Length: 170
Image 1 (cartoon, one colour):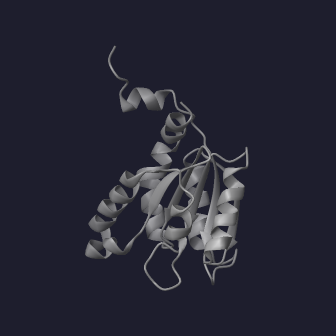
Image 2: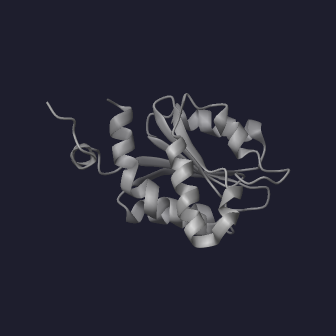
């Protein structure tokens, strides 16, 4: 028997994934969180559900607390974070999430940086976007820039969320 193609896998994947959106920022408020709002908008436009959203300071313990809570929430299938993935002294999302992941999807970060390079050049190397699995949930960390979030959602996450969840639950 031949292996199923990605197209066949996708045809059996759920069409709508319930996502929690977490903005990591020391300065954003619900009124100024343009990246979180954009992620929610793009998820909805792509047929996915937004199960909730929050903003936390760029403190590893706060980030980990919310990711743990949402990965234990039966209503959530994926957690998408924005912010804190750079290399400044306050950027700690990468380390906070990395410590929680049971499986890593290095291809996500590689593809994101490749696509980002096409838009912004060598500065793409500063991104520490990542994705992986925790407690049967997809967890993806994106940069805080709205343009980076749009790129990640449109090119990677929205088209593949159903496929990712299908594979994770097999």
